[in-house]
Image 1 (cartoon, rainbow, N blue to C red):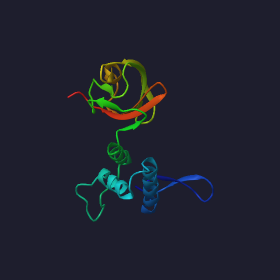
Image 2: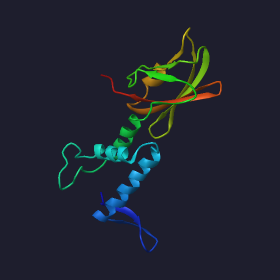
Image 3: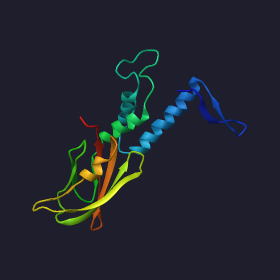
Image 4: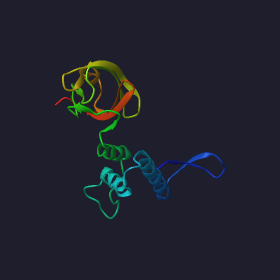
Length: 176
């Protein structure tokens, strides 16, 4: 935004300054971070996410254009369009988004002891546990205890058994 921008001054100190000339380097740096976070995305996908995140996206004008971008929102837009699963085995979290209950289904893991960890959007581990997945056709673990105490937000579940690992993204919502 170019207001109270921190920069490295010519005298080797840290200073703050104002002006539109600060906004372009800040924007370019933030877009570079998104490109690094989502290397498989096309440049136009990143640009569209930044536009969609902006304060005037639905009503751009000739003064502020799309407005001030919200890079957390842009990151979430890109993350939500990513594949929801990566890893060594097929795992499904249902329902997703969830409120207070969620089940992890493991299509190719039957009767196994599975360990799992849940991380919040900032990468902090907020829960870890284990369960015995068992069923005649597929394994499942109820995650209700883990989900119940989480705040609304975006999370990553990392699950593993027998040296195999998978990751899935999910959202916890407020109660209806």
